[in-house]
Amino acid sequence: MADKEMTRGAQLRETLIYKRKNGYDRMSEGDLQAMEAYCVGYKQFLDAGKTERECVDRTVALAQAAGFKPYERGMTLNPGDRVYRVNRGKAVMLAVMGKRGLDCGVNIAAAHIDSPRLDLKQNPLYEAEELGYFKTHYYGGVRKYQWLAVPLELRGAVALRDGSVVRVCIGSGEGEPRFVINDLLPHLGAEQAKKLMAEAVPGENLNILVGSRPLADDDGADRVKLTVLELLHEKYGIVEEDFISAELCAVPAFNASDIGFDRSLIGAYGHDDRVCAYASLAALLELGTPERTAVCMLADKEEIGSEGVSGMQSSAFDTFMEDLCAGQNVSLNACYEKSFCLSADVTAAYDPNYAEVYEKRNSAFVNYGMGLCKYTGARGKSGASDASAEVVAYVRRVLDEAGVAWQMAELGKVDAGGGGTVACYMANRNIDTIDAGVPVLSMHAPFETVGKLDCYMTFRGMRAIFNAK
Ligand code: MN
Ligand code: MN
Figure (cartoon, rainbow, N blue to C red):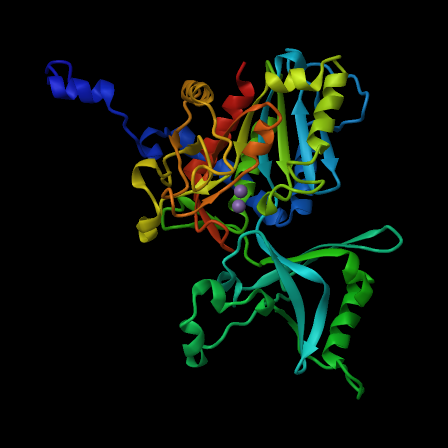
């Protein structure tokens, strides 16, 4: 409106007030096409990787195809070199060497590739009234009722006494059998329905139905269990005792799919946090030779506190970084103090159906872009790695300069609950860190929902961070 003068109020509104905008209002036709193409790759990544081990395998395959080599200690590296190291098959670190030395610090994206699920116990198989079951122990924060009466598949690994490892994947292939945890029928559920949601389904009731056919021509005990064991032995060469050294888990038996008439969303198991893991990985794989070395860390065990040798608290990450630093005679701590980390993890998307737990002014909205969290934690920010104002300003600038749609995100109302990420473990290493990631609807459910625009913008955000000088 060049010919018409703006009122003073309109001018002030224009310059002073912070406006949030739906990301679709700033997407070009080219952006929309790039978003769709990106999401095709993401959905493939989801279907291939439903456990951290599988995500590592898929990551290594993609990395090798993009010219990455396994890093060996003492290797001489030059700018542009691309390397990775796998930690015990469950976590993976990748780096693209920058033009500048490691004494200038590195740009890190740290995401996790474990997701809530049902792990099998170490002595899982039993028979009750001629039905065969697996006992489970849930992993991560699950709402137990959501795992009843949904098709499940079995994935994982069985380590045998001789050191060999048998990989298990059953239920995802065309025509393969699946598994299920049965629920109570409503006709007999009146008493249960009066219970608190958290108590209605005890953890010890999450028993997976795995068979019902008794062994023929036999009058001994546990004939159904024996049939199941015989089939497992035929297919995988394992016996019951081998469950003791197995990591098998039940995950939802549905693949990623578009959601909505307009196909603007993706429904899948494990968006948390493969949606950020894939964004970080995809951005790293397409990187040329960055100014600063770019590092992508895909960690395990975030859902249970980032503990253990494959979690973000493990010094496996420090060892990898120290090895890279040793090649340039740089001390690890000197590298860390100049480094920047984007703790790439999902946040909650505002859900109008549960408006009471959100605080609208500070919530992330679907399609408003990558969500930045200055802090996570619970109650008085307990457990948060509260990023400094300067760090937030830095990220604002980097994302704006790269044309990335982003928004600030707080999980929910102050006293409604909370959550944590790997951010505090990176910050404890003296690395400036901020949380950022995709807003998710029904987080931690067997089938979570995200907006394609937010997935794509998170990828663009990672790319901007890796390219930052
Ligand atoms: Mn997460
Ligand atoms: Mn989570």
